[in-house]
Amino acid sequence: MVQLAIKDVDRVLHDNNGQKINVLKDINLKVGSGEFISIIGPSGCGKTTLLRLISGLDTPENGQVSVDGKLITEPDVSRGYVFQHGSLFPWETIRENISSGLKAIHGHDYDHELVDQYIDLMGLKGFESAYPHQVSGGMAQRAALARSIVLKPELLLLDEPMGALDAFTRADVQDVIQKVWKQTKTTMILVTHDIDEAIYLGTQIVVMTPRPGKIKEIVDNPLDFPRNRTSDEFLNFRREIQDKLNFGVNET
Amino acid sequence: MLESVVSTKESKKTNVETKTQAKYWKPYQTRWNIASLLTIVLAYIVNQVVPSQEYVSNGTYRWFLVIYFVYLAAVYIAGSFIHGKVRLYSGHFAQLNASIGLLLVVQDLLTEKYAIVKQPFFVSFAQILDQMKTDHALLLASTWSSLGLWLISFIIGTVIGVALGLFMGRYRQFNYWAFPYLKVIGIIPAAAWMPLTMVIFPTSYLAEIFLIAFSVWFPVAFMTIGGVQSISENYFESAKTLGFTESQILRKIVIPGALPNIFIGIFTAMGLSFTMLVISEMIGAKVGLGWYINWAKGVGNYTQVYAAIVIMAILFSVIFSFLNKVQEYSLRWRQKTN
Ligand SMILES: Nc1ncnc2c1ncn2[C@@H]1O[C@H](COP(=O)(O)OP(=O)(O)OP(=O)(O)O)[C@@H](O)[C@H]1O
Ligand SMILES: [Mg+2]
Image (cartoon, rainbow over all chains, first blue to last red; front, side, top):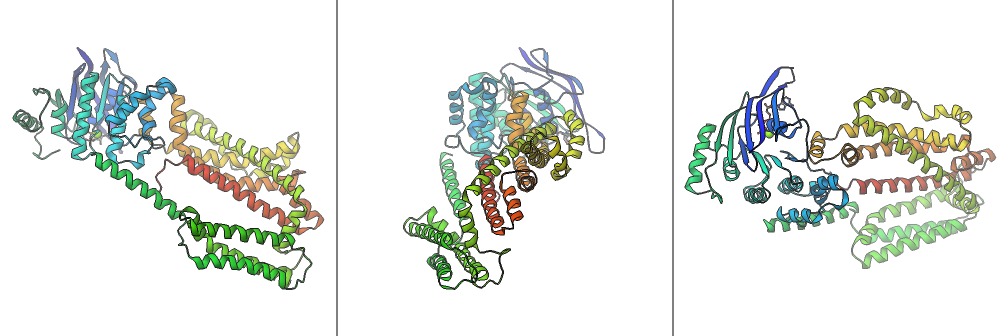
């Protein structure tokens, strides 16, 4: 049951001197409904670029990106996007931010309870009326996550949403994402630098290499749920992925 | 994690408190509070005891001093019992109030007491207050009329400026066609239109509205364009993935994002609009503070000119503070940089 299909996609951008850069080359990827894809690769290999193509914020120079057979040409609420950097609206409170999409679609009688529920789940209770500059980076990122999730997208694109979090909060948010994924059966695509995170969450791991950005390998995750970050199977699989990435052992 | 959440919340609270304290930062010192009361007493005694060179009726001035004294005393007494905002406020402004008291003494001596600077061009504060009392009905009517004229013109100018600025900032096509023309028109000083507007518009009131609004729209529009263009692309892209329509993007992203700049434009325009208000009332009107000044000049009563100037100082300061409060509230989401 293929939901997202990326076929022979190239993305060509120009640097400041007008020089062509092949940011993505020959990308082919099929994602089944309900999968959790972890995309991992070094900085600058085009992960964000790929996610933007899937969301429809950009369109590829060659090839097609389609969902359920329909070509993607522009962003849509059915494809949520959590940006790598602060994208919360600074002029709205945390609560207003989280409900902003719902309000845009349903007007003022949107599902208030759903918003409350996610404020709770994301550990944002007590900060509903704070403005983004008044909360920590981790809270802001969780709020951005909630803002997309409450819209119940069919496909959720996550661009390193946990990049700014400390190890403890990170593990918490990973569990939240996993819980949401299991409950809602939303297809999720997560970009990350963190191999453990990629393995802990993903049903498939996509390994990318840079210059030009290519998919090196797509690996099925053999681990069953619930996953234990310190089990032998986990560590063995981690080593396998690490070898495929073949850069420093301590790369995170 | 919960613990860290709670503790950050608490530190936020204390942060807010130090900020309100920072607004009134001068320490409370009883001697300064007493000094400021004494300077007012001194002003009263000087006015009472020192013989006058000029004939002035001082009744209103003395009442003013009494009221000022009672107000300060009330604030100080309240401040010495209630620890909090009142105390901070009275402590902070004690030195300033003392200087005002001294200034009142000095001007009294310079003018009516020793006539070092002379009537009719220099008059004592007492004389201005007396004039205000005598003329209060006309002055009040003039003030209302000026305020009304300013308000309607300023709102019209601001609305036009913001609307044009938003559209020029957001839509390239509109910007291409409108900006060059509007720039050439907007750079013309509003006062240059005065002779024409007086004959073109059916009533001088409409002409005045036009002139004041004209001085307002351009700075507002210009700043608004910059404000829209400075909004991070991130917010527009988030909005699109969150299902915002174009009109929602305009209302929820473009306007709030440009608001800091819009306020810069509004405050620039405010000064220009006050100038234009007074000038156009001097030339065209039969009412208003500008007209009052012009009329007073005509009959050679410079005390009346001073009276109108004092009222303008008060009126425009009130408008300024009000707009400042509006700005503070509208931009409460911004990170304070001080
Ligand atoms: N608008 C652009 N114009 C020109 N080059 C760009 C543009 N956006 C990205 N690039 C280039 O494309 C490459 C891939 O960028 P991208 O942001 O997709 O990387 P990434 O894998 O997300 O990196 P990171 O992990 O650091 O976020 C980079 O080399 C970058 O310099
Ligand atoms: Mg990136």
